[in-house]
Image 1 (cartoon, rainbow, N blue to C red):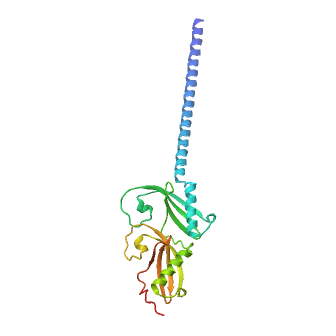
Image 2 (image 1 turned 90 degrees about the vertical axis):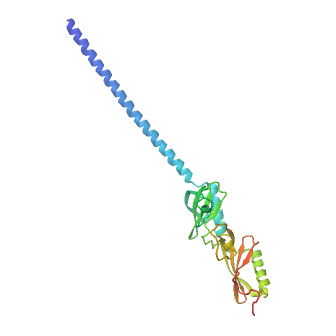
Image 3 (image 1 turned 180 degrees about the vertical axis):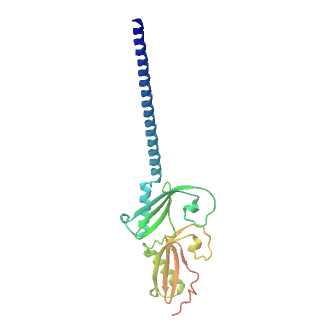
Length: 242
């Protein structure tokens, strides 16, 4: 009788031990799966945060976008609502020469953080470089602005007066026939230099063609009208024949 009771108790204990081990194992497995899921969730969230941060860095601040569009509108004569920024690329320009679209730059490394911005203007794509604060906005000088060629009347009068003084003909025999808005790469180009360095020190202004009786004279004039330069290749401007 005692042996039967002992056997029954022993079987019960073994069963209880197996049950406890099974429950413990189940708990550990479920905990492990939970930890794995938790780690996976953290990794996914971290990836999203990194992607969001990168996206934010590439996003052009709204106030800089407005400044770029205002510049494009002023140069082209196209209203801002008809302009569109089509591409924005965050860039590190190696130095100020690269930032200013220099064609031949030194290897000096003085980085400027900013963006390359492409603006759709009518049927053209204009490329701008802009620094991180938006304090420097530079249009690629190769762009043919063309849309806003209107020469202020005061500057036109200055050019005509210069042509009158040089040629000795009357004012009614002089006519401005062509005006092209230009970005001269540097003072050498502005002054009709034939051999100029690649230094980029831009001068905004116009190229103006003037008919003086039977000749065509080409002038370069800066934006304020304070500098007016006649092409030195104009033949004997003081000897205009009737």
